[in-house]
Length: 323
Ligand SMILES: [Zn+2]
Image (tube, rainbow, N blue to C red; front, side, top):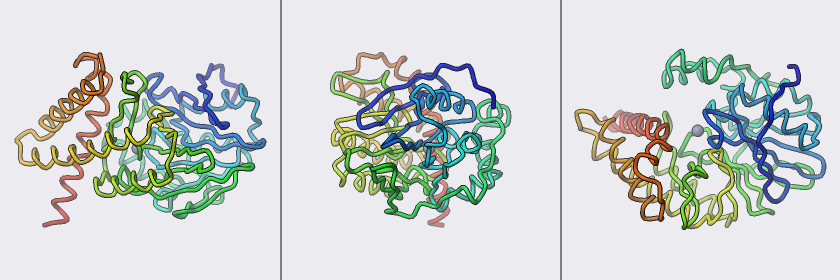
């Protein structure tokens, strides 16, 4: 790949942690994270193929040689997190891509991932967003067991399996720095929605493996580490974790209740989406947000759509299991 003439947006956080805007959909939507310790580095989630030039430019700007990157930690294989991983691995000679046992096969052979994503986005939109997915050779993949510890420089990173958003999801715990890289397991928190009381947060209930009970357990499992900072893909660092966890858990319960209540509606998608938006507007008001309803709906439009699809997929899966 020729040196790409892009200017990365880099956010410097404490403890050798940086966020790089993955430039997915719009600035401030998705962040890849980079952890540096004693001359070694690891990415946590990478964005799409179009994100990779920004990540490589960020390495240059931060003075980190490509050969110093030991790990590409992929919390799960949703394409906004891992779509560019194959291409990035080709640029990082010493890195291993670390995946949940259920996620790794999809990086080695992305055909099912492509088919699943086309079902959500349609052919044309898929091409535009994700392009050609590069497979990662088997010998460069590392399977992450639950509780597995990795060494990065002088730092220990612990990987926890955290189903709920996706069955094949893990998070990266940096216990010494009270930080967790949560992928999508600690929801979504756009900086544009911050309120006087702190960050605003919403769960991501996207297709096809959302499971409210597992999700609540996974959040409690993370809270047991008493983290001070959570690093989200959407969008980077949040603090005041106990308050956010309560907001998140209440919404996971409420969204599941909305889906069940609307399951028999003639247009359940429309009804679920409307109830979700009303819930979010109410919560944002309660937290002191000064954004009007239309601005909130604009900011959360993509999530309303995907969350609704995911809740419907959950309802249908639930019904099949009981029939
Ligand atoms: Zn996801």
